[in-house]
Length: 632
Image (tube, rainbow, N blue to C red; front, side, top):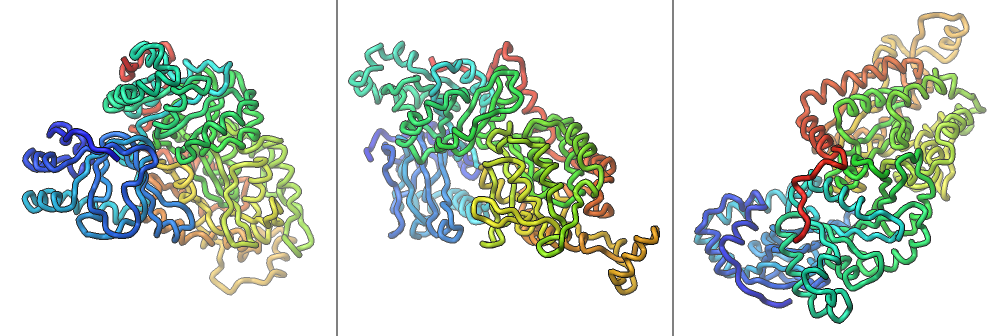
């Protein structure tokens, strides 16, 4: 780390204004902080904090990006818990004030500039200006209660690098469309290419020796662009010094190619290996008339967080990618519930009509069937028609078996799903999609985000005792509703910063109207009623009991997630009066879901916010984007 010039009051005021906790500080307090601030350059990979003795300084990010890892939380969760911080983020403030040990290490993800505040100087400022204590207390409180909040302005990525690995790809079209979509989300932005570097610093700046000499000047130029808003760096198609620098100095990487360019995967993987800590997304560009993406499985070898399919000329597809990259995706989670899951079709129709884009979708059990269909590009109306054709009533799935493993053989369900999804694989779906199954040999939830759609959905639908388990990848799988019927928590992990819309149709249990006041009749009594054709059906059936019991297993988790606000919009359409296997009630279920969602959307603040956002990025490509400027 190296020192640099001190900061000005104006610069510090601009930085502090990014965090609401510090935005109202008086000019006197900011002036006092400016006097004790030290500007420090931190190269990529350098560590600012380590677990152990309490840190002696707090840091305010001027440019660049830091990553703080919480080792204790990571051990408890069994996965890495980390927080990324960009311009305007205060790092280590609470540890310094409390003289407490840091929870983990803090390192620079890319070359960064920070303002360092030594403990004694910082505490002296707090004694002189109590408003600083109030601001720090607010930050400490928000960090303490924070479990699922969306990234703040200081935590969202600001620098995106596009890596075009396909020599035949029309990269300018993609970059311009992506930058316009990012501008609709983030405001003013800039795009920088090597041609602009050559124009500004001379052609020799692009060769290795010349680039090394101009490196700091180029970094300063890009810092100026970043200070104005987001910055998109466009790599060369070859491994040039500019390409290497772009991959080193970025918050996110987007690899762009046509699906047919799989021969470039190994080369791209080697380039990405140098920055394995940076989240990478893959964008596969298809022709405008592509019906279903194919061959995405080959691209799974590339270490990417997520894969996106876009069609040429489709601004809405690039807008979806932009929301994911900016950590502002809009996602939908559909719970299981047997035939009641047909209400999801009405909910999706209401969302479509409201103009709310869906950037990722997930489901459990029958909710997984609807989710996968929608992710494939099938409209809600067409999904309803397919159910009417292939599952008009419960008999379409009923193939009794000797009840040793299950009541039904599951062959009819297999046929319905195989006919519906054919050989499409989950990575080939237009939208990022996953479904949940339960591994009963390990008692854990399994997230299916690859493999054949029909096979994964079949595992998610395997109600214990009703359908036989599915053996897949060495696991014995049953219905995902046993552990996680509405996987809000998984969506949070899969899509950072997501706005989650969740729909529950399975935690309602059995309708009390089906439960008689007198003791439950025997099975012989109920069988006799059916053989006589009696309209009076007393009691509940084993099918109802097994289905309802499987769905109730995760009710506690769902209640907790909803109570804690993990879903911004939670819908529970009133479908309890409809039996869990009454697929013949499809028209009523779809209408109930549609009406319920319409009413909820009418009063939800996100309806206007997200619908207007969608229209912003669906303009014709010929229309100018006033919010976007190119780096001079």
